[in-house]
Image 1 (cartoon, rainbow, N blue to C red):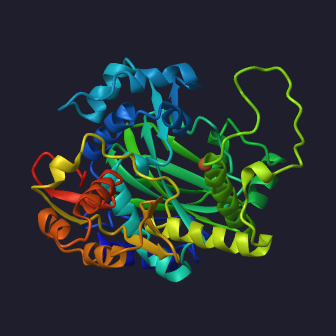
Image 2 (image 1 turned 180 degrees about the vertical axis):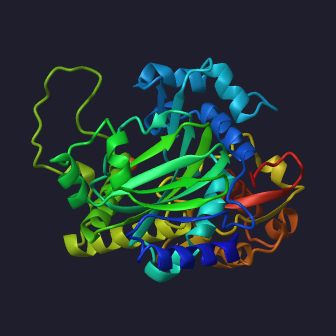
Image 3 (image 1 turned 180 degrees about the horizontal axis):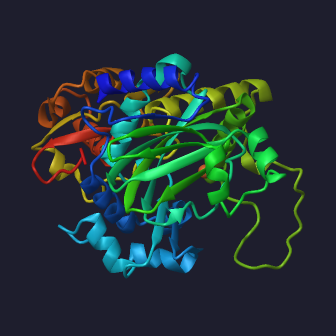
Length: 415
Ligand SMILES: [Fe+2]
């Protein structure tokens, strides 16, 4: 995949006039970013995620053109059974009716896609870096005809999407520059009657295995008359103001989580409180400028550890220190562990999660893990001053999917 990604990246950059124009590459991957079985597993993993609020926020289901929240349990309560393919499952669950299923941030639920996506975006990271670019992966599955939201543009961020068609059917995309669309329709409102506009747009049909670049700040519409599963590898350009907002809000949220709130939330009755008195929040004493710079540094370290994805993977539950003792571990490549050392403690950023750890001996441990070699846990732990603490830390890193258990067989770290 990694040599593939550079070639695909360069070909698309060339043929799309620097990621502006829609363009199609015929089956460019020697080793594809995912197979249909990986997507079946993804839907199962989505249904098993204990964070139901997150799952329902990221999932959208449409049946016969109607998008309704009440359709989500159809998917979540009855995911594909072991051995059941996507076509078979969707025919069963949606009873043969045309349907569309969209999941955002699937890097949370599929290790295969998260790792393939991170490799695919390697050329983007080396050219533009983090945090200028941020990434997300979405899944679009169905035989829903035209995109349920009609011909539309995605406004807000400057974003480009590389669609990969995993099959089994074909899927088309059409797009129009904003001025051209305005000329054709007389406005910039979405259109729910795409057919008459198609001859005036740029259109491509993707066969299974093809990759298509879509500039989603132009008007666009997808068409899926045959059952197809496409994966959208999305990259957004981050304005500095957006990074600053995300960074400071995440640091402030973390700080306040550690404080006890000065008002009691057990009853509604009003309590006298001076909201300008922020002494309870025990905010850092440095000036705003220094505080913001530290927040941005920390945000970048977090993003680097997740290679630009903003959503962390669902934790691997059910793994304990007893599973690790007889096992070996290895870095979950291509994701790095990012270490930040402070005078009295250290932080390890792992797949987008921050861990506060004692400083003593931590950089040697992170170096050893970062070598990417397979390491016997017993050996790594024995050489530490506090073996129990080291074992606990390794277990946490496995749960957060920053390192994989490579033995025993019960581990599913590389999924
Ligand atoms: Fe869109």
